[in-house]
Length: 367
Image (cartoon, rainbow, N blue to C red):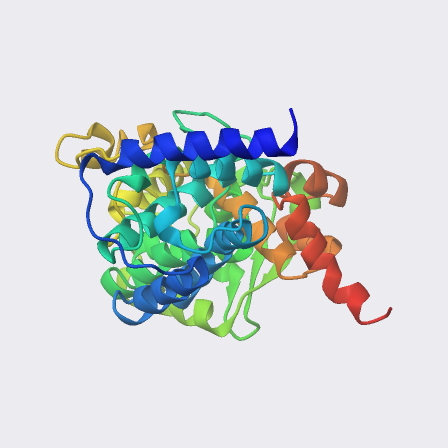
């Protein structure tokens, strides 16, 4: 098929998609993709109060769509965007960015939000957003690839800062994210292992008193924490920690009214707090009704939510976020207690594109 025939076929497809979308026509106002993109970012920041991190995430995800409009399809007016265009973008983005299913789902979900907004501003045809089809995630689908993204984690922590400051859940989620430690390591901490004057936590392998580390003595280490996290722990200890000891007479850092917290309770905390419906302003990606959703109503059933995250996904997200911010792999490995080889094979969830950009900063300065 010649390039001319290809273009004719695209035109016919786009013409059909155009008429499919015009069951309910409304007046459209011409606008370039980039102009709409900048308008959208300005509005979600200034009028909807999105955090800086979330705005940056939307900027990054939608930036690929704008690049595709300008460089691949030469779409100069969003009014002309069709369902067939969106199908082509989905295929292009998956291969261009070497995206896994979870990352593609995230980026297309953001595009869907953008197109809903664009519809209200008379920039695209009614119902166009319905043509965006993110890959479905159900149960443990892609569980090995799943990791929590920094902007969603920032929303979770910001929610706790505002509504549940220095609560046990707030401290648990803050420590898991900031340190990337395993739940067993977090459970093992005693109050005395927190050294506020040195701004650090000390991890010790103590199997004789039911607080082992996964890698035993090799897992022992000091973990630096920042001033904000120290202040959070101080406030938790003063106001919200259950003042109890464990069966060995020690003072656990993270407690319940019965003593040292169990690993199962820590896992439930993560599943509960990472449900999108748990966070103000976050709807269910699957459009489930929170009033009838079993996972939304019951903490014990929260792990059944297909859109929340496991503790391991928090650890993966923390490691990936560190690497994206140019922390050397050996430093990340030492902090998170993982070998460089295992880190690269199992934990670094950056795309090839993101890895390239992380390396660029080093090489641009020397060549």
